[in-house]
Length: 220
Image (cartoon, rainbow, N blue to C red):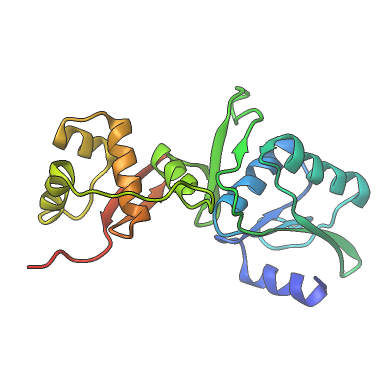
């Protein structure tokens, strides 16, 4: 990672795989971002860059790098260990933390949430934001792991009623599906996540919620 790489990332701006942070703040905030990138498609976090892309630099590289490492090891389970570079940029230092997409999803965040409450949560990236994952998304992340149990999928009455519903509707949520076939929302989530893994359905994530669509058109 060098000046040109950082300049290109700044030029692209914040997005799905790039986040700017003016300074290295609390390890909890950093841990949420690290876990979110690991749980999604990976990406770069630039410390010492303001939201508008202006470079302000970091103050103490060693202590701030230590804080980033602590965030990934103490507040993420399994730990997230980013690749860290310190890049000189117009007389200022920018810390670049690269987080690859993980094969150990989901990485849990174990620190405090934004309201100061403890708890275990899963974060993902949506557009340019770090957001909490819905239960359905967490299930899909678990199913993507290489050590996930083999998929066994049988299409019964519940699945057939789902496909019939989607023949006339564009989307469905786990709650709507549970009410449609009179099963628990947790069981509905498992079925939908299995259909996503089988390639039959697609999951669309929003902040704290998700909905599902068919991966292809039903035959006439």
